[in-house]
Structures are given as C-alpha cells and as structure tokens.
Image (cartoon, rainbow over all chains, first blue to last red; front, side, top):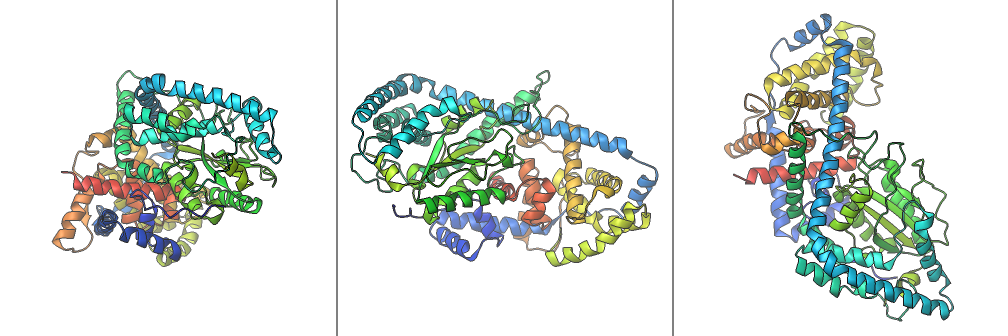
Length: 428
Length: 194
C-alpha cells in the first residue's frame, strides 16, 4: 500500500472556501482550509474579498412594500384574480423554462463538442493514431506472450483483462479496464492543460502510459509504483484547477454562442425529451461508456469501506447535481456492472473477491470535492496517482455518446481493486 | 428565512395560521401575508431588479400560495415554501418579458431586466466604503447569471441556510455549495471589472 498523497493546495474555486466563510465546516476541515489559505497570498485576498462581499451584501435591502400591500393582496384574492387558470399558465411557463434550460444545456454541450473536435482534429490525425496503433500491436503481442507463458499467481490479473476485453459485448456501459484507455485519457488530460498542438503531440509521444499501454495488467516488471512512479503528475489536478478560470471564460463564450443561436428568431430550440439530460425517452439511462478517471487500490476491507463511503456521499446528495440534470439513480455501483436499467442501485453487488466500479457524475466542483475527500481517505491512497480530472476531449466524447447532453458535467468511474499487488504488477 | 431560532418560532406560529387559511379563513391568510410580505418583496426585488415588478410578483406569489395552501404539508417552513413559489414566478416573468431570449442571454448581455434601474437600498447606516460596495454589489447582481443570483441572494441577503436554499430551489445541497461559491466569485470578478 502506498502512502497517502500529500494534500493538494486549495483551488480558488473549491466550494469549501465559501463554506468555511459561512462557518459550515467541521473543526478538522476548518483547520485544513485555514492552513491552505494561510499558505497562499492569492487565497488570502480571495477570502478577504468574499468576506467583504458577504458583509456588504447584508447591508443591501430590497424595496419596502408600500403600505396597504396586504390589503391589495386580499382585494385581489377576493376578486378572484388569477385563479386556477393563472396557476396553470405559470406551470406551463415553468415547464417551458425547464425545456428551454435543457435545450440550452444541450446546445452548450454540442458547442463544446464542436470546439473539442475542431481543436483536436489535426493533432489526432497525425499524432495520436499511429501511437495508438503501435500500442495496440504491442498489447496484442504481449497478450499472446503471456497466454503462452502464464505465470503462477497471475490468474486474477489475466481474468481482469479478459473480463475487460469481453465487457463491450456484455455490458451496456463499457468498463474502463484497459490501461490503453487510461493512458489515452491521461495524455488527453495533459494536453488539455496545454492545448497547443505541439504540447498535445508532445504529451502523446512522451506519455509513458501510451508507451506501456501494450502491457495493461499482464507484464510485471518488478518495478514498484510509487505515488508518481506511474508517470502521472500529482499536480495535474492542481494545474486543472489553476486554469479553471480560463476554461470558465471559454465555456461561457461557447455558451453565449449557443444562447445566441437559440435566441435567433426563426431558430427553434431543440425539443427536449422528458426527464433529465442523458436519459432516454423511455426513462432508461442512455448507453454511455464512462472513462476510467481514477483507480483506487485497497484491501477488501478498505474497498468495502470506500464503496460504502461513496454510497453515503450519494445518499447525502453531496455529489450529484440533480437539478442540473443528474439524477440520483445515475450512480451505478457494482462489480464492473453498469447502472441497472431501472435506475436503482444494486446494493448487494460487489462481492469481496472481485473488483468494484463506482460511477459518479456531477458538476466539476462536486467531483473535485469528492476526489479531494478520497485523497484524504486512508483507504483511497492511490486516487491521486491515477489522476483525477476527466479531459476535455473525454468529456466531448462522452457528450457525443450521451447525445451531447452531459458535456457540462464530469463523469468518473472509480475502480476499486481488491489487491494492491494487482495494480502494482500492472505498472512497469 | 431568518435565523434559526426566529424561524422556529415563526414556523410554530405559522402552522396554525396555515391550517386555518387553508380552511378558508381570510384573516389567517392576511396575517401570513402581513408577516412575510416584506421579505418576499425584498427578495423578488433583488432577484428581478425592478421594484414595480417585484410588487406584482409578490402579489402573484401570495395568490398562488393561497390557492395551493392545501398542498403545503408543513414539512418545511412556510417562508421557504413562499420563496420557492416566488422563484418560480420570477423565472416565469423573466421569460414572459423576453420570450425569445433566454434568461442567461439577457444577463450575459448585461441588459437591464427592468425599465428602471435596480434601486437596492441600504438596510442600515454603513460606512461610506461599505455603502459604496453595497451599491456596486446591487448593480453587479443584476449581471450575475440567474442560477447564481438566486443562491447568492438567498444566502447572503435573505440569510437562508444551505438546506433552506436547496429546498427553495429544488436542488441538492451540494449544488447550493458550488453555486454559492461560484456566484460569490463571479460577483468578485464583476466588481473588479470596470
């Protein structure tokens, strides 16, 4: 078991900052935030500004109702103003607003997808596919070699790979068990931090994950994977946070374009299907593959504890954003299984001798907060090692699969593997 | 939405009035309007930025509340329920006003959502610096995305708890957390911009 990762610096968009200002954090969390803020002059300024804004906001007071307002209401009531018809009209308007909101979100997702495709098309064509092809060829070769010379004690790892390889044929939601997929995602993530084509090409070429993608879990080299030994930069999440404002600006720009498009006379807003974005019209969840964003290593006991904790977070409604289109039943939990078609969690899943995958979807801040929580957890010590932020292209691809409905959210799959050795053997 | 002890007392006092009003007792409903209308009008003013419209929407809010009193199960505070109705009326009104433009588009363009400028008054005598900041906040609020504005107004101006905001807006507490911090941060950016 590796040692817990060092607590990352606090991102300025971490909602705990406001919670701290509002006095909602526990003593432990308060101390943690205080330490983080004290160590960052920019955070000190941010907190001071937010405190001033909060204090000044309290000084404002809306218009006072004129004398006789109550009488005016009672007269209107007696006159039968509005009535049930008026309420129905408001209800209809409210439904229209919701439909418009969903349409705008879908349009925003489509714009995000367009941008992502345009930005990456050139690099993808010349920089990524050759490496992926090479990785695939190497993976096939090594798989054959391992099958011919299978070593004792590797049964579980091979079984996991085989299960993963068979998964697309068996499951509605593809389990992200391939190291190549993880590696590609990480490379994209790095490229997102520096969106220039040169940087992305560099990330694709230099990525050790891509280079060893041919040996997902069956080529032990004896090398022990420390917190950063697998080539994942622990500061990646921090770089993501540091760029949050730039990304936010870009996102707003694209959203503005989407809204303009919707607001243009003659351009009809797309008709939103019933239910939340990401739900099919028949109420079932759309078939969307999720990325492996985080891999957590733990003993069986730790694994059960972590899964229980994740369930607890969901049950508390702290992670998923229902109003923004993520229903609580979107959390799929099980031993590599996807969400049940009826949207209910299968609590009895995840036997102790198998790996478990927990899928979460929510607002980026909520997901980030969850990952921070996991980093602080002794049972989830390798969260940081595996990377913690979905890439923009991953989101875009996800949006494409989801009917461009969820690109404004992050979806992560936290794979909880029973044995630390299983993970470590998969690392060169 | 007031400090907990006040609200608890208020809830206790509201309960019987709600029951009586739901049974058709006009005087009980009058008392409820008397008790809550200032906060609802103030809330709507901050939300929509227009005093006249705030009064109209407040009246609609109370009329809707009266007609749906039977559906109020008293598992939440009456004031929270009123705020939820008010939010819906404000959103619907904003859409009626500009049927072809989304709420956010109007905000993004920085256009006034009312013919008259938002006149948010100061509640107490404050120092010049704070008074100036409060006025700028009132103006910046007008340009804040409606999703964040709702949360910021409820939290920082109406003294609502995260849980009350979640209930009023129909979103999880986690969403309130993120939207509040985002809203405050955006207010900060708006105040910093010329």
